[in-house]
Amino acid sequence: AIYSLPTEDQWYKAAYYNSHRVDSPLYWLYPTKSNFSPGNSIGTLHNEANYRYGFWYYQFAKTPPSLTPVGAFSGSPGPYGTYDMGGNVFQWTCTQKNPNDSNSFFIARGGSWLSQSGLSLFHDFLQNTSRRSFDPATSNHQVGFRLVRNF
Image (cartoon, rainbow, N blue to C red; front, side, top):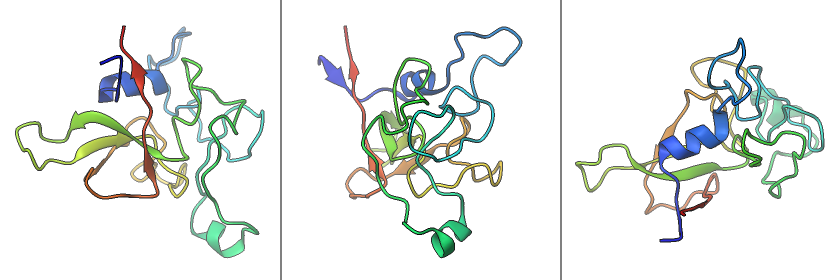
């Protein structure tokens, strides 16, 4: 195939790899080339992503969070120039949670526009340690995909 879903390892490197490593870890904590929780302002600011701040966001925000066009957070590309690796939608990988089980769910990475970030180390869906599994037979407005080109 010329194009395919990325493996979880391919997706992870494209989102978090720190190619300018000097005194920092090999991988960033967030897919915005940062070790700090991102903001969520659309535009050219660095370290921004499409996600929600938490419960108060629904109670007091003038407009609810929603999907944005790819590149709306133009100041926050990933290490390989990819946009929206964190927030917007979780992204499918071709990695199964349990490859020996034909009913196993597949792994999605990156968080969605409904994900929280920076509130808890255990529930931060934009951090590099976070991953989710979904049943690919079920549609979900928080899950999408990106393709890789195979050479």
